[in-house]
Length: 286
Ligand SMILES: [Fe+2]
Image (cartoon, rainbow, N blue to C red):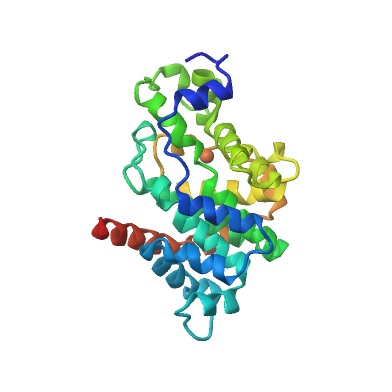
């Protein structure tokens, strides 16, 4: 692999990245289609029992603060709205991709999934001041920000990254030196091919350097800070977590502080616990 390798060639060469699960494709279609209705949502949830039960559990979590528990799709749509429900379905439907072991990044099975949920939940909380729509988009961006790792990790497995000259170098720079592309760019390319909105693609591409983002600048800053927080909490740390450089412009843009970090740490815990429970449920059904 040389730095000259094009994105296209790289995506072809790492062709063992599993295709988007059908249920996730349907979830993405729903998110793109403002005319989707209850019947579409119910059909998706009927495709996977474990997913349906997770979505309803999440809907009942403290984050949404519902006065009464919801137990049907109908109630969930009524109380949470389509946008939120779509996010929950998207998260549950990409679990099969994200829960794979990622040995190239030293992530055991389930760790990337836990990390992605922590970042998604964290990014949504950080972006909440910008309104519900941006907050949900931040959730999507956080969920998918590291999906490019699935494609690069097979190359990393056979690469010695412990050379002295690479100590302390941000991991994204290392990826570019080794493969000509980092996981953020590769993930953004996958998101573009999945026809996700351009702000989301931009945010995924720049989640490690959010000051370089344009239309997805707020999303990228929220994901970046949530990502750094999850890493510092040891959630999905992997090989790259110890070389995480926080962008000071993101700190300024989102008015980030130690107090907010501590609050975030407490508030994302239940989401990570649910993510673990979901994996346990899936495995016991296998
Ligand atoms: Fe990343």
